[in-house]
Amino acid sequence: MTKNADLELVALTKRYSGTVAVDAIAHHFKAGVYACLLGPSGCGKSSTLRMIAGHETVSDGSILLGGKDVSHLPPAKRGTAMMFQSYALFPHLSVRDNVGFSLRMAGTDKVTRDRRADEMLELVEMTALADRKPDQLSGGQQQRVALARALITRPQVLLLDEPLSALDPFLRIRMRAELKRLQRELGISFIHVTHGQDEALALADEIIVMNDARIEQAGPARDVFNAPKTAFVARFMGGHNVLDLPQGKVALRSDQMIVMPAKAGRVDGRITGVEYQGTHVALTAQIAGSQDVTALIPEAQFFETPKAPGEVIGLGWDDIAAHPLAS
Ligand code: ADP
Ligand code: MG
Image (cartoon, rainbow, N blue to C red; front, side, top):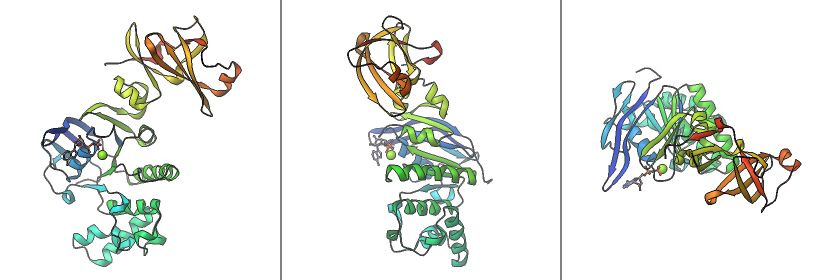
């Protein structure tokens, strides 16, 4: 097999007794892509990832890697690897032995596996700590070891299930930059499960939004954010108002709302909240039909003509800012 291979999901389905967790999803992951599976808790992200990894049986449909059906192969024979949470490290093994563990299982001799483990540790910048035990490492360092342990099998596709969720916010942002750098350097595909839209936007070449066991929308990160196809995607991605207007349901970016004097815009609204956010001020207003609208206004612009709760304002937008929604 070549180093880079496309991964294809064909009508992939997971049924647990009584639940359809993944409902005949289809997707083509291009080789070398950073893809994020994004969606709320329970929508089927982990089940999808575990089927790709081979840690969960496929109920129906198939998984093709480099054109070959791997749906029923054991995890180690697929060309995929799963990065497990750092708490799955073996506490009694050194960092180096943790990283080399899968090679030991495969019967690789000690000299070779130590050399390969050291290469991986260099990749994640952990060379100096190779002889430590996991409990002598910080959370971020453990995370790197878990990453090195997954990468040592030279997978074509690395699967990561909420890899940053156990980290504090500061470390999470540093580790996500690290993941992106590694993916670019290695040139392999990463499929990263998250329920955080900011994480998906920061990392992904491609975002696959899941809802209720199905793929709701997939595409380049900017397309999914700028042109959500459904109300669910618009709400989940954030930064949008979903409004029922005479022309139907539309998504309107909060930062593209224009605040005007009453009667000068497309709709009037009464201000219900003013929230200072540093670079912006978020104004919330209630328009006809008790619908709440948020307008994100650059802070300098807001403070030129400050507004207060109770005031009536007009709201405008360019036609191009309104995206019609399917539901
Ligand atoms: P996510 O990762 O998006 O939170 P999961 O794939 O873990 O979603 O779960 C999808 C659905 O399948 C949920 O309704 C969940 O309760 C159910 N589920 C997951 N794993 C099992 C299991 N081992 N047995 C039965 N139901 C499961
Ligand atoms: Mg999950």
